[in-house]
Image 1 (cartoon, rainbow, N blue to C red):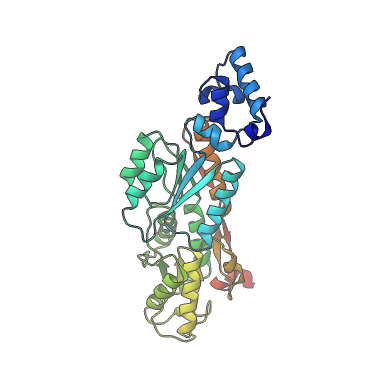
Image 2: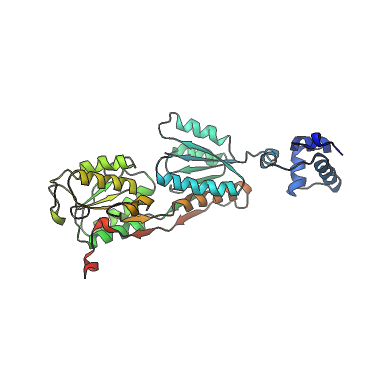
Length: 349
């Protein structure tokens, strides 16, 4: 038997050397993942016992040519939405024994090169939204690197996980029409993904009711971005003017997410406007601040943490090879009606 010093901190490489086999053979013998003769398995197990070896995730991963890490690419890491999605992803990845390498593209130069570099250091990738150019996504797919697209339209040979957007946007718009509103503004630029799908639903319902849909006002998806958009959209006559609105001012502002909506509410307050008396405001996501705002924010709830968790599970299936056929998963969303859109005529009876 080896002395205690020899067995302390033994590695898979030392086991392979003691048994006179490759580290890949050690991995197969310990995990029963491939053909190993009875004699070879006995030599490996004897070496494991003599060295008091405990397999580490990293050691086994290296033996299999893996990194024991996943990569995830986000446009930004600030704000409650990204925090919730990332938390859900990291929780599941940790349970599955994988570390997470995060690349935030905000303010970064040569993003596509950074993404290519990350691909070489991980077992699989999750890409959020349209942070990565289509050409680079195609490169990753062709390299056979396991890939999951999060909150982005599916592409061939890659998994996709997203929340339902269009139907809930239609329900939200129909609810606002039920209030009697007829002039609308939209805050938040098309992103080619989730937000574009939301605007598609809004436009469809407004058009069906003979209302020409407005063009979305581009802004950052932050409270500050919403505030600036609100100052622009609500620049009509201030003061309590009822639902007819002031000159050029919409009766309702539909926002791409809750942070933008909270910024619009701040702008309305600064301009002396009452929400919802002078202008209705709605958001999307149902972050914690939405329910605690005053007025509480009408929004669409999406399962932010579940989005990240579902992406982590899908990626693990692809890495382990338990599934080799791409799939698309759409998570349900729900309209949450609160006071920022005003009392509904049907509810007043």
